[in-house]
Length: 319
Image 1: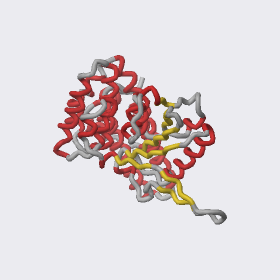
Image 2 (image 1 turned 90 degrees about the horizontal axis):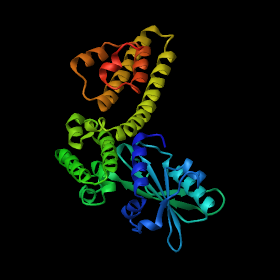
Image 3 (image 1 turned 120 degrees about the horizontal axis):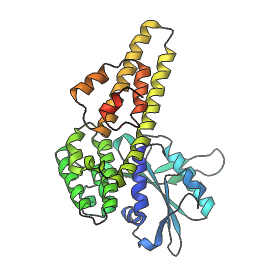
Image 4 (image 1 turned 180 degrees about the vertical axis):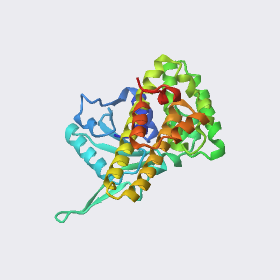
């Protein structure tokens, strides 16, 4: 699992696996449901999350979270289900949970047909949950452990702030402050995933996200999650930018245009990730970022973004 948003789904599932079994249509008491940890199954190193349901006839539930499109998803789920069946000798139910429209694809039909040249044709069947198609009220009125999912559900633009406020109010009423902080932090990530093109600064205060950074118990959790997200995106974008510049280095004219294009992409990425971490930049900070055109310098800013605590610290001269 490579995406930080997928990791947020996994965290929610680990907090309350029985709630997910219920959500997916097979309600069971919490005592009969447990997550299979990595030391119990080598398969969990491959699959997103595996739940064991201890019915009279036990079975496994494999949940695969997906935030971006991956045409290999049905094949991977088939591989996971087969490996789980061999490992545990138990029936496996496979569910793909698509966290955003970007993860959708025509091949995600719930059926993977297999037509071998020798032997009978057969099909691997799995379930697909498209979060943006689900009614938001089912989450707002349901389990507190699934509240962050309301921000991925079927919400109309005018109702975004109202929904975020409703999530905040229910979570804030919990008696477990550590759990509340974690749920709202995940809600903040889902806001970026679903409404990254909106003014996130308007939504973050509703969830109280800014205040988290004053909470030492949550600061380490958020920093770890953000660092993982920033590092993966920075490395991917910068690697692509550097490769493109090197590939066109022998054509001076085209090189200049390509390098400027990659520099624009890098600046946009730093602006967006920095906004998520530090808040909306001032005009002075925006001017500083716009003035950086050297790819190497932008790469250095991207790396420093992982450890900086403010826009000012990001642009300060390295010690």
